[in-house]
Length: 250
Image (cartoon, rainbow, N blue to C red; front, side, top):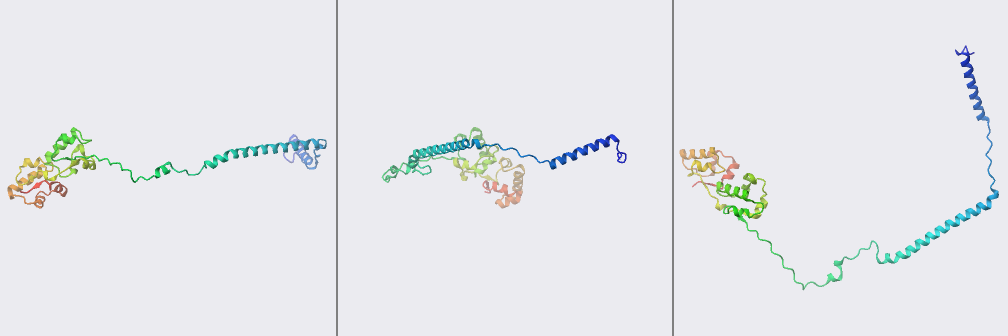
């Protein structure tokens, strides 16, 4: 048979023996009835077991009684303190006491302190020492303001301070507290009489604008008003807004 299965005689014997052993083990587990484990006989110790359980119950009761006695003693000590000082009770603020509820109508009010009077500096009439009295204005800033004011012929608005290079980031609201400007002190530009050099020296005039004005005067005579000035020079509106407070056509 082992030849029929394509096995050698030794392999057939070994395989057959292994299968027989496996079947025997399965049959043994299937038909073997295990004997019950013998239970120990504790009847002789029943009285001792009952006494031990009774002792444990009594010990547990004594522990519970001691704990209850401790809790009641703590509650008895804590109750008077709790009644006098409730944990979440809102106490009256000391300013709400009877001392502060007295009649104060007869008391004299405290005199109010007078605020400091800030003496503003008139930018069109001051010198550098007056400007240097203002906080955040040193000698360099004061000198630049005086120099630019003289070139302009006077300031007509605080916004012109931003045209000075070192004052471009100056807060104008701060300047309003310390400076004032009177436009009546502005020195006018006499468009019909000033020379080319005098016109060109003004910050708002460049060489082309000054030359255009002088050339028109020589050919056509006086310039009468702002509208004619803008028509002649073709100046953009922003420049005209700057020049308007300074131009005089007398």
